[in-house]
Amino acid sequence: MSAWFGDHQVLLDVSLTMPAGQVTALIGPSGCGKSTFLRILNRMHELVPSASLAGEVRLDGDDIYDSGHRLIDARKHIGMVFQKPNPFPAMSIYDNVIAGLKLTGMRASRDEKDYLVERSLTSAGLWKEVKDRLRAPGGGLSGGQQQRLCIARSLAIKPKVLLMDEPCSALDPTSTRVIEETMGELQKELTIVIVTHNMQQAQRVSQQCAFFLASQGQPGHIVEHGDTEAMFDSPIDPRTYDYVNGRF
Ligand code: ADP
Ligand code: MG
Image (cartoon, rainbow, N blue to C red):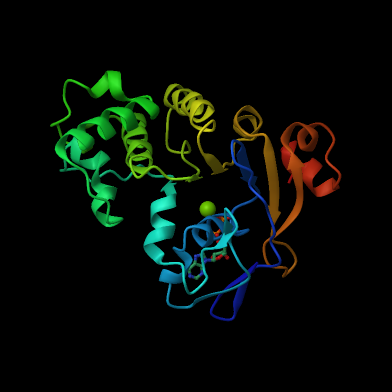
């Protein structure tokens, strides 16, 4: 796919398959279009008035940009977590977790909600810490807990794909480790795509990696992608070598 903001092309012929059951890490310098790529994957890109797109995004074979595919379907199947944890601060932990249900038109009984809240918070590695204060406001949690609450909120809609845009950049190492462990469990049920500037993290959590670059007036594109271990051990492109070794 290729993407533009007005006349400014930000992505050029980016093509990537993100297999189920794997974590795919997107790496590359700031401004090379990684976040734009993620927003294209969940149809947030089209919310920017100047934005345009050429190409397709297939989820289990269906193009999510097809006219028969509703925006709400993309929202239901694709969860997103951002760099800055963004729970609804005044809303209770419980209500934060189920906040996405209404937005995606899902109905659930009280019992189903209770179950979903416990299940989602458990999957996000937060249940034990908050089970006795589910009615407390989400804004009262620590940064790492807030991020896990946001992960739980994404999981409550039972997505097929979880997109994470630098989810640990604003967190301390301990919270980062907890989230990385959580990802290891989640990937058994979900396709995960993570943008990270942390090369060690990319190596720890991902099986597949794509290196994005925008250079010399060229829009963001993928220089190299493939097996994470292979890309860090023996990158093909010298620019990948420099980047993963901290020389840029
Ligand atoms: P990355 O996540 O890799 O840092 P981004 O996807 O955020 O890169 O940005 C890619 C390019 O698109 C940058 O040149 C940025 O300035 C531009 N861009 C991002 N969002 C917008 C927007 N809403 N309007 C105009 N340009 C944007
Ligand atoms: Mg970004």
